[in-house]
Length: 302
Image (cartoon, rainbow, N blue to C red; front, side, top):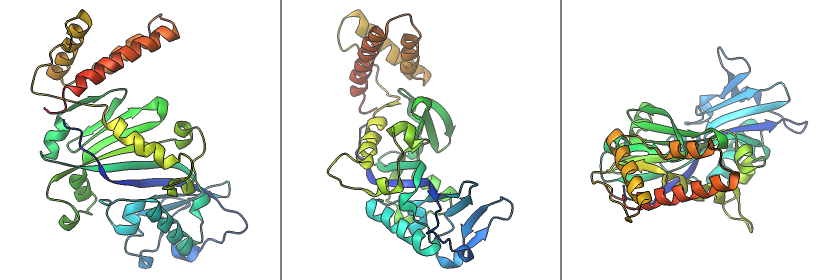
C-alpha cells in the first residue's frame, strides 16, 4: 500500500478534568441534568446547534470532567482540520457558555488523527490490513480496525470515515470528497503516561513555540505509527539478499500473507522472553526491526 500523505490533521475527542476554585462560577441554568446518570449534565440545546456533543460530570474533589469532540462541537462533523486556533475557540466558547476555563484543565484522554483519500474502496483497504507491528488487534468491524499498545496506553484506529459519519448521522455528501476516505487516529488513554508529564488543554493549543511542543510530538507520531500497518500484497516476497537470514525472513513474510496474520510481534515477544541479556535483546530486536522495515519497503503497493 502506497504511503499517502495524510491531511486535515485534528484533535477530535477530549476528556478534560478542571479544578473548580473560588473564582469559578458555573452557569448551572445552562446545563440539563442527565435523566439517569447522577451528577452528569449536558448543555441546553437551545444554546447552539452542535452543543449536544458535550457532557459534564461533577466529581467529589471540587473538579468537573468534560468530554467532547472538538470538531463535532464546533462544526457538527469532523472532516476538517483542527488547529490550535479551533481549540482556543472551543475553550472560549465553553468559558462563555458555562464560565469554566478549560485551558487550565488536565487532559485525561484525547484523540489525534488525520484523513487519507484512497483510490480503492474503504472495504478493500481495511481487509488488506493483516496486522500492525508492535500493536495487538483489539477490535475489528466491517468499517474499522483498532490496535492497542498497553505499555504506552495508546490505541491506533483506522476506519472508513464516511461509514463512521453515517453511523453517527452526521454525513453530508457536500463535506466529503468523491474518493473513499480513511481516518487514522491515535487515542491517548493516559497522556501523562505517554508524555511523562501532565498535559493541559493549553498545551494542545500551542501550534508553535520556541521549544518542541506536545503537538509536535503527536504530529510526527501519527505517520510513524501509520507506517507500522502491514498490508497483504499480491506478489511473493523474495529474499533481498541470498544469506540464510533473508531467506528465512522472506519466508516469514510470505507465510503472513497466506494467513492474514503478522508474526513480527511474536518474534519480538520471543526475544523478550529469552534468556539473553538486555543488550543482546536490544541488538536482536533492532536487527529484526531493520529486516521488517526493509521488506515492508518492498511492498509500497499491492
